[in-house]
Figure (cartoon, helix red, strand yellow):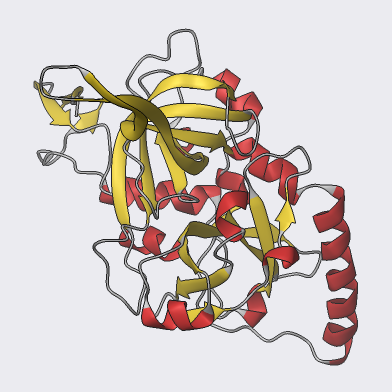
Length: 338
C-alpha cells in the first residue's frame, strides 16, 4: 500500500514530516451492517457454508425519528438464498425469513435486489448505512473516481467464519477499469467497475467502499474534502471468469474441456444503480403506504425514544468513524498542520 506524507510545523516554526497510510483502519462496527444470506432458516441457524452476502440500508421516513430499513444483495444471490441473518450492535444473531418473490429487482435487469425489512423501530440494535454514503454518478464525475483509487469490501468468507454469528472479513484492492458495460452470460450486460480484488464464493452481494486520500491528486477531478473522501462505491457481483484450455505438462491440449479460473478481478455494480432501485416507483409507493399506516398509530401512541434503536450511519458519521481510527504518527505538542 502506497504511503503519503504530510508537512507539519510547530508553533516555534520548526518543520517536520509525518508519513501516513492512505487507507484508514476500518471501524469494527461497520461490519455489523453486512448480512449473510442462506437458502433456509435451518441453514442460517446452523451456519451452513452456502449462500452469499448483502448489507442493510436505511431510507428516510416521513415520520420523525423513524427510518425504513432494507436488505440489499445481488439478484442472483436472492434467487437461491433469501433467508437473512444479521448481527446486532449488541452482538446477537437475528434470522429473518423471506421468499425470493418478496424481493424487488432492478427494473433494467441490473444484478441488484432489495427486501423491505421494516421500520427502524421494529429492528432494535440493527445497524445500517444511510443512502447518504452512496456514491452518485455526479460525485463520481466530480472527483474523477477511477483507475488506481483504493477500495475495500466487507463480506463473507465461507471457509473461515464463526458458524452461528456473522463475522465478516475484508478484502482490499484498487479500481482497474471505470464503470462500463460488462457481459454476463446469465443476466446480460451489467454496468460495473472492475476492481483488482479477489472475489470468492460467499462475497457476492458485499458492499464495496471507496476511500480517496485528500492528499493525492485527482487527475482533473476536485480534491475531496476530508468529509468527502469515503463512499459506498457499489455492490460486488462476483469475479470475472476466464476459461483455460486443459493442457498437459508439455503444454499440449489434452481435451476439449475448459477450466474456469478466477483472474482476481471483481465486478462491482455502481452504488447509484442501488439508489435507482430504492428510489423507484414501487418501493416509493410502498414506503408512502407504510408511513401513512404508521402515522395513524403514532397519533394514538407516540413513539418514545429508545436507546436500542440504532439510526442509519449517516455521511457525517461514516467519515467521523474513519477519521477516528486513521493511523496517524504522533504529533509533537503544539504542532499544527499546514
